[in-house]
Every structure is written in structure tokens, then in C-alpha cells.
Image (tube, rainbow, N blue to C red; front, side, top):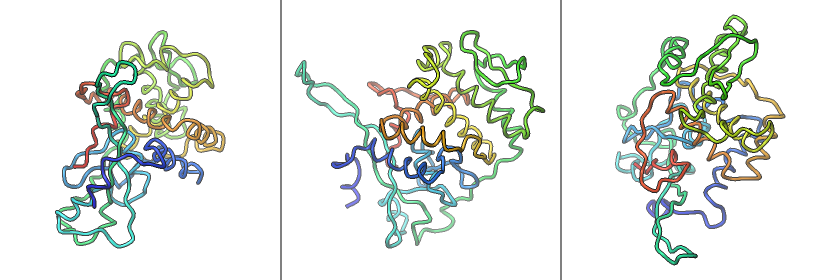
Length: 307
């Protein structure tokens, strides 16, 4: 039964729509999912393999609000001698799968990638699992120093200036301007703002060469909206890695309404933004990734296979 539920597309609703629906429900409640992906629960990961989930799967799983972010497939639960509690509903993890299909124009067989999903359960939804198989979540120490370390260790880092009282990234001259830390009410706000600007800087042509940064048109445009959300999500991710609780810096009706509209208009919007944010975070943390042949542009969600 479990095998039949994995590696499939939804007939009535595409996988993109399934993902967007989950984010829309959170936004309609007035909650911004990516602003608090995890606290003491830790980054979402598979209990058996220990492999952390990436890209949009981070947000899909962390916004569920479990005490511990360990997840398993139905088969993994059974293999560990446990069982899923009666009445518990599964959660989706998405990934790419390549298939050989016939091109409509050339009639040649070509490899194309499709967004798929499989189902997982949190350990809190299970019973009969041995407690020693579920590790305790580590608690980050000295979060402010952790922020400093992230900034200091960023490769090809842009110059950080303190020449104006506003915070911004200048792609033309490749520098970040930040107000002094003592101009912020709290140091947390300073680091969130700095991370936000550094995420933007990863789009420079000398780094990830993001079109939304290098070919910026105007405020309010589609590229601007995508880049703004990319920086917001990326900054929240970095803050969570340091163990700092993220306050709702931008949690107001205008932002929420705008994001709701984007998700309603384009189901791919949130998937692409999370992927861009993952790439930016990986660059800042100097996390190397191996690109697979024929991998689509939003590949960071593509290798979360069910193990």
C-alpha cells in the first residue's frame, strides 16, 4: 500500500498546487511559515538516514510545528518495529524524477524531470519506536557568535559598509550597507537584516548570477517580488541555524496579502523562491552541491528521496 502512495502525481491537483495550498493555509491564518521554520525542534531530517531535508521541504515539514523534526516513511516506521497511530495523516516531501518521454515536435525520446512526492510521518505520530533510536535535538550555543561566524566565513563576501542609516545591497558596486549595530533595538534584528542583504548579494554575477538581481527592473515587478521573498526566506533559514528565535519582523497584512496573491496566481512561485533561497544559503555556508545531468533549475528540492 505504501509503495502505491509514493512516486506519483496527484490526478486532481498538481504537486505544485499541493505545495502552494499548504503555504496558503498558513498565510490565511496570519502566519508566515518561513519566519519560524524551527526552534528547539531542529532542522527537519529523516530519522533513519539522518539526512536533512532541503529546499522547500524544510518549510513544508518545519511549519507543521512538531516538538522534534524527525520524519520517517511508512515502511521505515514498520522496519523499526513501530506503527503509525490510528487517525494520523501523512505529510508530503517533494522531489524530482526524470523520465524518458517523446518530444511532440521532434518525436525523439528526451529526458524530462517531473515534480513528484512521497509521504512521511513525524515521530510524534508513531508509537512503538524505541526511545534510544530518537536522538535529542542539539541546542545551539552562543547564537550571536554563530551569526558572526556565518558572516566571517562567507566566501567571496561583498564589502560591508556603514555609510548610510539604511540597509541595502548595491549590485552595481557589489557592497552591502548596514546601519551600525547600536542603531538597532536588538542585535537579532541587526543580524536578520544583514543576512537579508547577504542573500541578495549572492545573486551578483560573480557568485550565483541571479537574474532577479543582475537584471533588476523596478520595485513591485515579478522579479522584485521573487528576489524579495528569496532574501526573506534565506535570512530566516540562517537565523534558525544559529538558534535565534525569529520575531515577525514583516508580519503585517500587506506582506501576507501580497504573498497570498502570488501563490494563488502561480503555484510554482513558492517552490522557485525556496529553491533560490536554498542555493543562496548554500553559497554563504560554502556548502558544495553536485549538479546532476539534466537537472532542472529548481533542483534543490530534487534529491530528497524516500530514505
